[in-house]
Image (cartoon, rainbow, N blue to C red; front, side, top):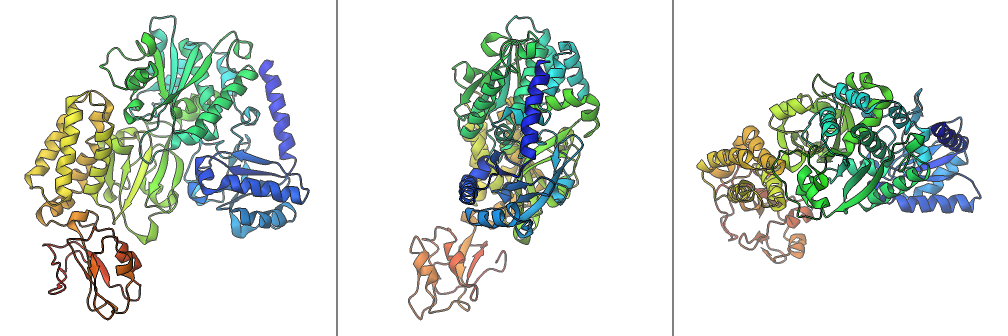
Length: 637
């Protein structure tokens, strides 16, 4: 009865809103960075000037980060239109055209959305969404994350109300049979972990949500917390009830201020209406959630290191066993799951395990959530069924590569993941397939590379990150990754020997075997996968002193073609930061290779009608003299 009263209030608020024209503006971090707050201010000013009443509501991210700021205008008995890349200058056009008139301003529109039989929004007109299946993103970008009643009106907390009528054992069995695997990277079966924590002896138990998202290019957890924080909170409450805990914590990095703000607001509102705190919904169950802000260390994402940080200690992993489910926070049994793992729980409990089991592959159920970054047309977020191929993600969802470049590889799973080549584009995305290919699901970051990226330099970049983020506790991780990085530095500068490739392979395998935590054990993955799939690039760097992608500075040079240089043009001279380019008016310009910093500015400013500056991979050292300017045929661009 208590929850029904809350639902009635939420429904009446939603019906009131849907009965009038209203405007939704995406204000997650991506939207704000693109100018969404200025767009909101412009709407309010324009509506006020015209004495119009149309609520302007802040929502989260729909996943189309490339199209921000996104605006949705909903009119009763009319189209709900999604507009992209809106600026304050375009607001007047939208108000006059669609809010006041019947012109939907289709030249500014991305698509329209409707609602299905359950009231869940979707965008059928966008081909990208035909390939997605949104379970935990189903409300992101459509509801106000700062209004708990908006969440409830869209089915929120119905799973909690249902769970409180079940026994803890029934809930755990439902999670086990759903096949839900942890989305933090390891892919351990969530139901097994929940069961272990419930059976562990101890009166005091804890639930921790790991929102320490430290992978370069990954921002799925941040978007969920900024767009639908109540979903995660509901999953945590259900987990607390299932394992017998009364206290939970969300460990979130301090670099996510908007996520923290919206989590705090969501927790406060949940406590105010009796969904969180003492005697939840009159059930007698008590559960509280606090927030712990992390300092941003990548290793803090490792479970035991995260717990150490929460206890005020240095973020260092410890030996297991005992597992956290046996001895975790302050020595008590602790259930620790990722943001996305908790976000799936309300869907599974609310819809039944059968719906979740019907999605995905035999051993990887449900959906996979990824951030799409790098050299693609449409960066942002996607949620697809497990088993979807990389090809579908790259070309049907991400739009293919920018500037008509050729796809080369994708780094999956962050700095600890693997670099997969074009011939694996038909690989299904699931835990086991990625593992067999030498990669991992990880937290869900995808970074796409085209033909202009160097596989060796990519491995060096990610290894540089993991080397700096190592806590230093393990010798193999602390010293081994540093040695790997040193060898890669030698390769990218033309100083390595062919036998260094064998050393890279053997040392990488030793680091995987000899490291204590997942950071060290997975750190060599970028090296191993690039060696496996792009071995010819390593050999070109070593044997030919050549970077095929023209990325490694020590193996490239900028040169001016005498026959194309316009003697009256001085663009390159004026912008060169090291004054490496010589030649007065009426003279052919020449680059002093010893002074050249390889910044590429001269190539950028050289007029297109001349194209006199080229970037090449020389086989031998180029002369610094203006005389004898022969250009090697190999690698010229």
